[in-house]
Structure formats: structure tokens, C-alpha cells
Amino acid sequence: MYSIFRKELADHLSSKRFLILFSLVLLSAVFAIYIAIQTIRGAVSPTSEFIFLKLFTTSGDTLPSFLFFLSLFIPIVAIALGFDAINNERNSGNLSRLVSQPIYRDSIINGKFLAGLAVLAIMIVGVVAIVAGLGIRIVGVPPNGEEIIRLLAFVFISIVYAGFWLALAVLFSVLFRRTATSMLASLAVWIVFFFFVAVIAGVVADAVAPLDASATIDQFTRNASIEGALARISPATLYGEATAGLLSPEVGTLNPALFVMSSYAGRMANPLPLQDSLLLVWPQMVTIIALSALCFAASYIRFMREEIRSF
Image (tube, rainbow, N blue to C red; front, side, top):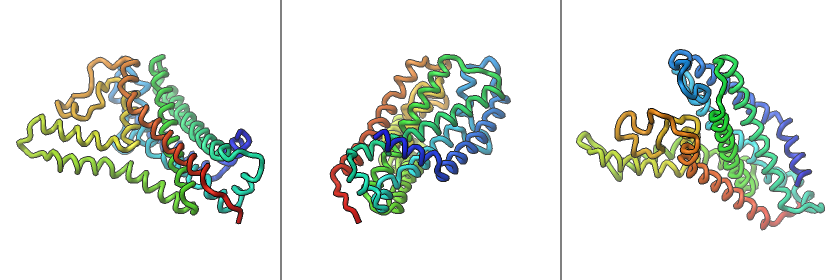
């Protein structure tokens, strides 16, 4: 497995596909952090808390935040690394040659998945480190110990989130023989989860608990609860909530029903301690980890049971 891991890792890091995607992510991150720095300079006082974390969550008038760009590009890069992991080897005939050697079959899929996950981890850690370095250099405010731990937790959940999309792409690579089909299937799932689930959740919530001009606070709360529960079907929603709780300590709750109580509901005058923030986002983190494990387990079982023929 280690030999396959090293070979796949070298192929990924030297491929033009990865270089182009990494350059795109880095360019978007630099633009986002530039806008965040300009916004922070005009809106945040030197005595404000967690200025360093605001570099990752602050958006401007022309560009969204770095966090939005990362949540957008992580699935794209993960899908690009995994959609042809198995079917490309099968179509080229390399897979039958591999299994004819004294190599365990599970070493193939394990090595490919771990190599893709390592590349994604390198990309996420590298981009976050570059953005953090630029922020410290330009803003001049170094992070404290709690901010560093929050940032490390954010990096961890981002890697797990990338692992879900990589496992999903590998699963489609095992299910479909054509690389184009597996790529389109992976992108279709990403588009549905990222763009349409929130819209569908809102439509269903309005149908089940309709709102009008005379709606009471209980009706607003029920509508928001239904919409939030349905939106959490999407891993993108879970990732957004988890990162918001980690990088925005003033967020006191992730329950969407509480945000209808007042315009300031869900935010606290005193930021949550680190332990409370971790407890707040723990369900989202566990769910993303479980989804990643389920997708990879499905691809692993299917790959171990399928018949491999030489053509």
C-alpha cells in the first residue's frame, strides 16, 4: 500500500490538473484575504477580540469571505482527484496487471484514497498557512493560543470535509466504468448539495409551515426549524455550521429557530470559550466524519467484490 501511496502522491503533485486547481484556490484565497483585510481595518478596533480569526470570515462588497471560497473549491479539487481513481486504471488495463501481482486488492484502493487525501491536506494546510501569514504581516496582530487551536480544528474539519467528497468521487469511480460518467455524477451530487438543498429546504418549510403577514413567533420558529433540519442533509451546510462555530466565537447557537427571535439572536456579547464552541459544533463534525466513512466503506466493499478481467 505504501508503494501505491507514494506513486499516486507523486502523480497528483506533479499533474497539471492539481497545479491548475491549486493555483485557482490560492488566487481566490489571496483576493478574499485582501478584501477581508481592507474591511477589518475600517470596521475593527485594535482592542477587538479574535481579529486574527476575522481574516477568514470577513467578506467585502465585491468578494465573499475566504471561508466561502474554501467551501466552494474543496469539493471541486477532491472530485478532480478521485473521479478516475479506479475506472481509469481499469480502462487502461493497469488494474488487471496490479491485481495479478503479489499486491492485496485493498492496498490499491486504500493507497489511492490516502494519496488523494494527503494531497488535499497539503493544499488546505498550505493555503490556510499562506493566508494566515499574509494576515499577520499586513494586519500586524498575531494570533493567541485559543485562536491557533480554533484554526487547527478548522483545518481538521476541512480535511475531513474534503475526504467526504474524495470518497464520493472514488465511489462513483468504482460504480461506473466511464470516467466522464463518474465525473458528471460527482459534480451533479455536489451541485445539488451546494446549491439546491437550501432552496428545496426553504420551499418545503414554506409548504409545511407557511408564513404570512400575521404569522406568530411560533410559526416563524417552526418554519426555521424545518428548513434547518432539511438543509442539514447537505454536507456543505454541516461544514458551514461547523466552521462558523469554530471561527466565530460570538456565535452562541447553530439552531436556526433561535435566529428568528430577534435580529441579534444567536450572537452573544461575550464570545464562547473554546470548549463550548467545540461542543457546539461536535454534532456537525461527527456527522461529516460518519458520511466520509460511509462513502469510503461503500466504495471499498464494492471494489473488493467486483470481478476484474483483463482485456
